[in-house]
Amino acid sequence: MTNYLQRQKEILDKMTLMDDFFMNFVFNDQPELTKQLLIPVLNISKDIHLVQSTSQSLIENPYGKNVRLDILAKDEQGTFYDIEMQQKVSDDLSFRARYYASMLDYKFIHQDKGKAIRLSWKHLPDTYVIFFISKDYFDEGLPVYLVQRCLNDKNHTPINDGQCILFVNCSYNDTSSDIGKLIHDLHQTDPKAMFNKALADRVQYIKEDKEGGFNMSELLTQYLQDTFEEGLGIGKEQGVQEEKVNNINTVLNNYCKMNPDIKPDEAITHVSSLFGIDESVVKQLLH
Image 1 (cartoon, rainbow, N blue to C red):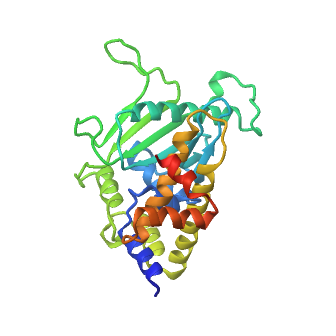
Image 2 (cartoon, rainbow, N blue to C red):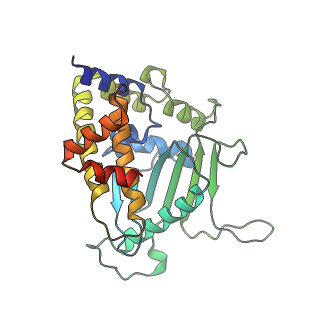
Image 3 (cartoon, helix red, strand yellow):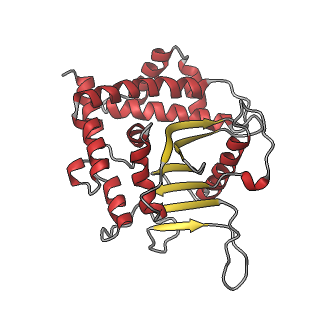
C-alpha cells in the first residue's frame, strides 16, 4: 500500500459520524439510515417514511448568502429536515440556525426552476433544522433543546407555525435512553462499539469493505476538487469572500490530514498546482 493510501486509511479509521464530511458520505441517498438520526432526536414514531436524503444540498439565494446543508431529508408528508453536524461551536450558531430555517422556506417557494410559486401561507411545509453540536450549547444538561415560537402567556403556548429548530448536545453521555445511545454512536470510530446496528453496518461497510473504502476515496478526491473550485468561483451573493476562505481552508485541512508531515507552504503549492490555481490567489484569500 502506498504512503498516500495508508494515510488515507488512517484518516478514515479515525473518522466518526461527528465528522461532517464522513457523515455526509454515510447518509447521502440513505433515507432509511437517516431515519435512525431523526427518531430519537424528535422522539417520533418509527413509521416515519423518508423519500429523500441528500448530502451537501446547495440552496442558492440571488439576493443574499447561499447555504449548503449537510443532510437534507424529506418525508412523504412533505416535511423537510436539515441535519447539520457542528464540531466547532460559535456564539452565533442560533442565528445561523434561524437563517437555515428561512432558506428551507425559500427553497420550497422557489422549487420550480427557481421561480416563486403562488401558494397559501398554510401550505408552507413543516421544517426541522437540527444541529448536532459537540458541546452543551445552553449548559442545561439536556440531550436535546427544542426551539419553537410561542406566546408570552403563562403556559408559553406554541403558535404551531411549522418551524422547529433543535440543538442536540453531543456531550451528553447517558446511554440509558435512545437519544443517549445515538449520541454515543456518533462518537465511535469502531462500528463494533455502536448500539444501532443499521448505523454500525453502514460505517463498517465504508471503513472495512474494499468497495466502500474505494468509493470513499473517490468521493474524497472529488470533494477536494469541487470545494476548491467552488470556493474560488466568482459569486454574486453577499458574504462570498467568507465562503471562499472556508472552502479553501477545508481543502487544505483535509490534504494536511492525509499528509501530516507536509509544511503549510508545500500544501498550498500542491493544492494550487493540482487545480491550476495561482498560489498568490490562495494566500490572498487566506490572509
